Length: 476
Image 1 (cartoon, rainbow, N blue to C red):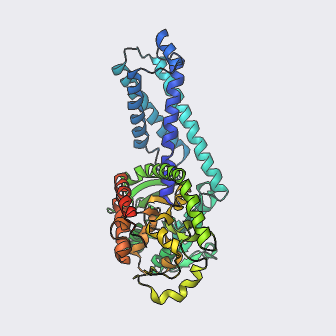
Image 2 (cartoon, rainbow, N blue to C red):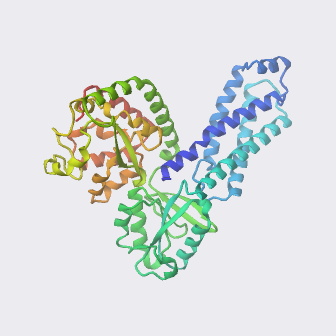
Image 3 (spheres, rainbow, N blue to C red):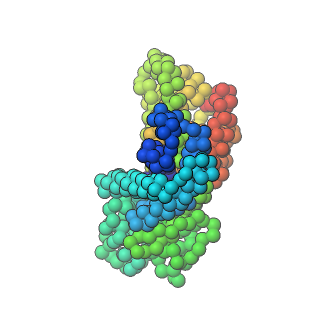
């Protein structure tokens, strides 16, 4: 699982925490925990809620969310031990209980006794602890059965590298799969058998061409400082998580966080800002809602377009192709078929007519496009089935365009590869800033600009500006 998807999973617990909070409030209220009057208790049974109680609920939900965020309970905890997480839950719930007491005293005339407060705190703490334990055990179960794995490379081959490798191999619950080692002169050949990948100088090229989620650096700092700095910087450019011992050096241009791997303190370097990581879960929720609603509303259009394609052109209704998505993971994209059935096999014969620069392929009057397909492309209706990819989590509504394998293999510079650190999308800055008229380098620069400046508001702005572009039918 890539870093962004893992962050979305972690933030998904926000909803679970708020559900637990609401349940605890309901149970405590019905147990007379607040010494409520008989009349108010009757209102509770009839689901009647006073205005003051509604205000308390809203303010407490907001405070609860921010407290859990402040104590790191929505951060990546793959390398954290349970006791640390339990202690953070204890602190967050305790602080939330104090805020709840203050809100109740300020906004309601009811007396809040110690017993009330203790019942609320104990229920909230135990329920949250139980829910988090279930989530953690569920993730451990998936990792031990080969799901939710992260591909790891170790840079170095000394004693530190051997120690880290053994910890990674012995902790199946962490979900790490050791791809291999990188070094110029391997010193522990027993571990290197079948696992040596490349030299330090060749490592950037290896990273650019292979699926790697995390890089653990275990080189001697005194003699390899410049190589370590260069590798960490390159990992940041590609959006790949890099872990180094936390007492080595400080990178002022990167975002860092500290974790512990069986007693070894590790500094994690990542390229996203805390604000971005904090809101990616909202982006995913937007994707699910918009894609789900879109598929329901457009269901009649699916039937009509499918019939038109079936009647006018022999072959399947849908076009499926392998594309490159998050962290170079491949997935199958779905579109309405706009070309003849054997279009991909005909492309090599048309390469000399390519009008696009760089590795992209584009012909303004492509002979493979069917008459109905040309209309589908102009109106962007052919893209609608990609809402299925959005629901499956392979794409987003807004994000860099997913590239075919042919185009990705033709990218020989490293800087555009950072576009794979964000989930690909149906639309992005390229869609509203020139679209088909853009040169390849301009297109890639817009993708990186989107990643660097990403926010929920930017997504909403792009979606709103995409609508007139679709109406103008400017596609090709």
